[in-house]
Length: 321
Image (cartoon, rainbow, N blue to C red; front, side):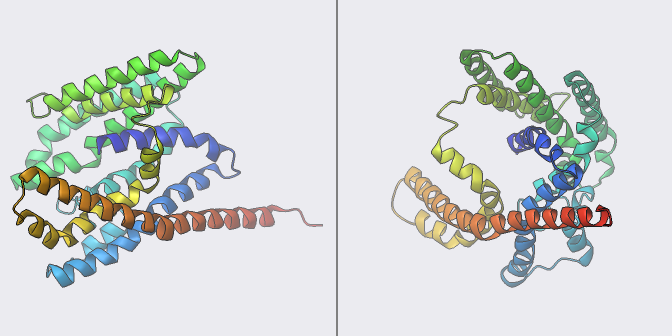
């Protein structure tokens, strides 16, 4: 999810000028973010509660449900993973959406963002050293250390820094070969950090990995490479949010099919390939339907809401004849 957070911050910076063109830029930004996330998330929440009640004999207390509804579950170590499977990232993302304008407007230069990023990295280190040990449950402490908002905050800042670097290079009209070189450097950094993922270091490798992803993102933004930018990747980019939230549900549902495949007298690699192909095909179909029937209507609803609120404001402020 490091790449997702880097791209999220980069894209927020990229789309902010569009919101500036609106008469109510902050409202335009808020509506765009909320109606991008909420429709599918709120669809999955009762579905997940029902599934866990019927199939897993699980129930959730109202405190956790309310925290999940209002996106405050990330601040409770016991609730940090959320109710909807894989939704821990939304518990990180939504608070960052709230904080983003307070970073975007005051931090005008790349150097200011770098200084804040360094300070936050040290804050993460201090949090892991002095706050996380206060959690008596070691498994819960380790989980919260990785999933809490502060841990990923430097990653968002790195994404914002990447956008500033991209903007600077774009004004210089650099040669496409420079973009390819930057992409190769980014891939090398990602590979190096992947090899050292579990090395004992003073700082989290996630933040170093984020630098690699940010470098790759800068390079691809300058000089797109067909391997990463093509019809297939653009298609999956559209439905990626639905794929992300639906894939655990689909995998859970396909458990009997996986057991049947692994009972077949074929090689282990063929079993794995068959499971991957089955999962990818079904998740793709489900995600496309979800995008068409939930996400797109939700985004249209956000545009209608913004238009009506803006129209009402114009009516209120219109001079009397």
